[in-house]
Length: 362
Image (tube, rainbow, N blue to C red; front, side, top):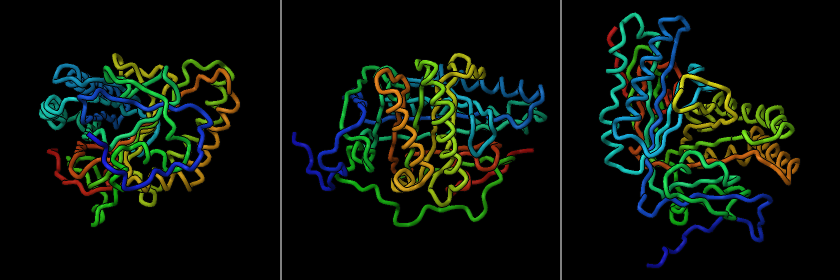
């Protein structure tokens, strides 16, 4: 069977050569879609009762992930920075089976988990989930090494191979198979933004995605770095990265960024314990691939990240252990679902897309 003719040319410049090796993921041939679910638990107060309530709710979420049509792979995080309450505990699960994922979501009843807590504790808690399905032809990945393959790279029987569609503007789009026939345009009608941002607290909010919504998860890992390389990342590159993510969140309306979170990976067996692991990622949505590309190519905050990364590679040319990676999904209309229960203003896509609002019982 012949491959379809490419309607839109690659953006790769003629005679382009990568300054550093890059790798992309190949999923098992049976896998046609990836199903991703993030779940978060916020704590709005720091008193003992609130901490106990969060611990109980987190146990409920852990049980849901582990015993109800459990995901193919699972990770956990603590929120470092974002538009919601700091310290939020977050999980992400990836499924490769549509039926198992659908059955799992049927049993994820955040309102019920919230309501089981005594009334005096509920106000101190927020719960949310963001789920989406991705056709693998609308997905791309990129890794700087083979010794660290998180996220989708943990799916059994997947593999990574070196490629040359990297280190030029437009490379991420080129790596998406469907970009040969699809420009992933914005919807003809602009996605609805609410006239007034929902307050979140005291509300149950639900909604779905517009067409060609984009999700990105982009990570860093420096566990195997020696001291000089660790210091170079922590003192030079990491502050630049943090500044770029903060710019996106502070200018969400102009950049198309929607609820980006800066996360530190935690032990999935002890998600409430943050031991300062040398592993972080940014995760969230953009209104469209063009928005992500525009920021990456033109804005000083990302250009500073890009230059900093290149400087790091040049400073440690022979024994570099610092690893970066990302995965990008272009999501079809209605293939993402959002739910927020008593969450702080600005959590996730709140304020960036139209959500149904329901008042929680006092």
